[in-house]
Length: 374
Image (cartoon, rainbow, N blue to C red; front, top):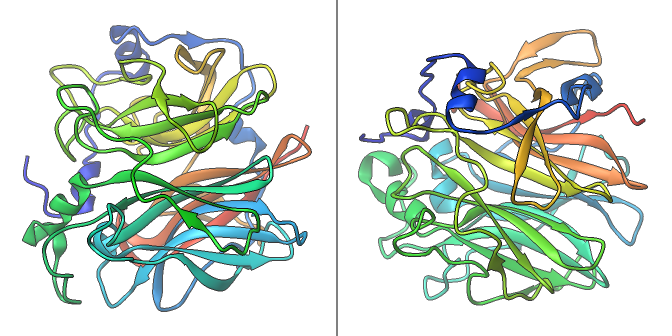
């Protein structure tokens, strides 16, 4: 299947019912969680989150710093490029606010392009920030490519550069004792693809969680061939954030597609450990699990390998209630991230945008939704 833009990733192919497809794939639907995660969402503050007029903004990840303020790590790239240049021109930045809702103000570029001799020399994207002991640890994917940097007018998905850059995605990591740096950036990926396995193409979309014993559990995205469906999720673990990161299973931990229909998959996981077991929310790309294309699903696991969908499976929607009483249907709602305080999730962050349809944006920003705290 030829890809001309990132938009082509999300063709809405609705087939048999969600439960039938899940049953066919042997994926359990469990009754443990009766309350839908989506019911925890409160109205979103208009004007909250993080936006920059001259940049596409994506990938929110927020943590409370040693200064008591809230620090958002995000991806940005110039609007002189098209939105599709996330794969070739993104850089990770930091913004701050006095409250979780924001608005957040840009502070600095944290992970700039550093040269094509590095695996992450051209692009940094998908930041996820955690605190591990004395260190702030920033996970992301980086890539490089041999071709010249694209011109502002180049459609990288039509020229083929987007696909080449996509195949070079690798998970990287940086760490610092201060939220404001300096950041020590590792020079090699912390997790590489495996030739001949289900994750032979890339490693990206890192979702780390520091476990009660100090180990790091990490979910990542890959695929058996390339950027075409199905996209699959795997799990790795390390005794220290410095690694090594070892796979917990040779198989993907989520796989909803069939041989006849590859276009049923998930991405953008956010995982946490509630003290007893793992939970996660993630994007249902084609809507065959939660019933909404691009909506979210909730799942849980005792060991991080064997996962179960909640009975109330829906985690979030692209239809947003705002604190002024209005309702909108967003073109996209992606890269969910939960802020925790005192062990409870208090705010859901997501990348979103205004536009006529998915990935056809006028502007993008990282929005925030307060949560009911039980």
